[in-house]
Each structure stands twice: as structure tokens, then as C-alpha cells.
Length: 132
Image (cartoon, rainbow, N blue to C red):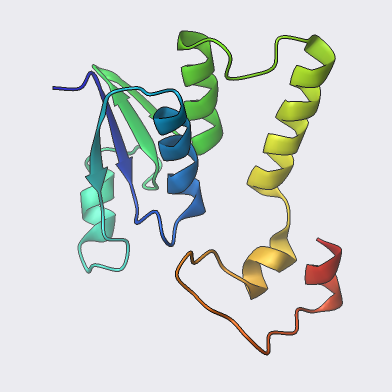
């Protein structure tokens, strides 16, 4: 059995869930995956069993519970080498880009929510979304 367990939403629709999943896969880490259907009536109760924030993703490492995709990434970076660039200036730039992707682009997220399966045509994002 894997030492780590990642509790996440559907990776097709939850970019926050997809982020730590991709990092774990990239690092070739053995982990268990618990997928919570986010649109299910009992989703909030199911997530609350694992997550103090009531949100996914959550990484379970023994008794340690790490929630929030950036915190999970930083935790994995402490354990596995080469997550961040070795050069300090490059590492700072990479962290800034990751933080911007994590918390920025509000208009873009509002108008074009993450959906890997969607095929969109005739979509005309607002000026704010285009600026993002």
C-alpha cells in the first residue's frame, strides 16, 4: 500500500486537484488516490472526513494532513529533489509563476472554468479575461 494518499476531485474539472496529482506522477511517487465526485450530494461530507478546510486536494502522509495544492507541492519539494530549480533566482521565478497561476486570473477562471473535455467554439472572453 502506498505511503501517501491524495484526496482529490475529478481531475477533468478540478485544476487544483490536477496539480498535485501531476507532480506526484512526474516524480514517479507511489500514492493512493481517493477521488471525490464534487457534484455528488454527499461530496462536502466526504471531503470533510479528510480535509480541515473542507476542500480538495488533500495529501495524507501517515498522521499528517496537508491541504491546498501549493502546500502539497512545497511538502513534496522538501521530500523529493529537483521539484524547484537549483538556482535561487530561477527558483524564485518558478515560485512566483506557480503562485500567480494558483491565485491569479480571476476573470479568466470565472468565464472559462477548467474542463479538459470541453470543446468550446464561439467563445468571446471579456477584456478582463483576455488581460488575464
